[in-house]
Length: 53
Image 1 (tube, one colour):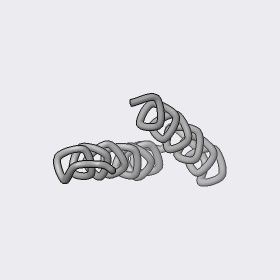
Image 2 (cartoon, one colour):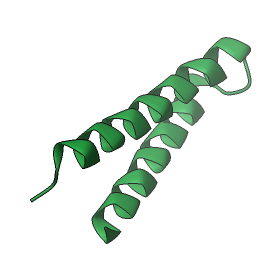
Image 3 (cartoon, one colour):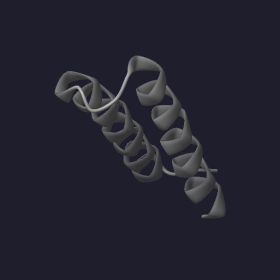
Image 4 (tube, one colour):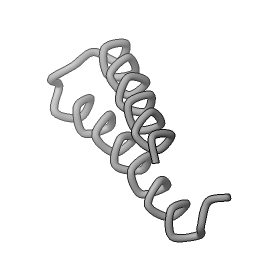
């Protein structure tokens, strides 16, 4: 069972991943498809890290 602290940490990490996608698009560094692909990869990496705990 995960504690509420772990849940909040996980939510913050996902929010950071989503925010970085929007920043990449706004800065014109990536196309929408590339930004979405990067977002999916970051989210998968975060989930993998959370599962290890």
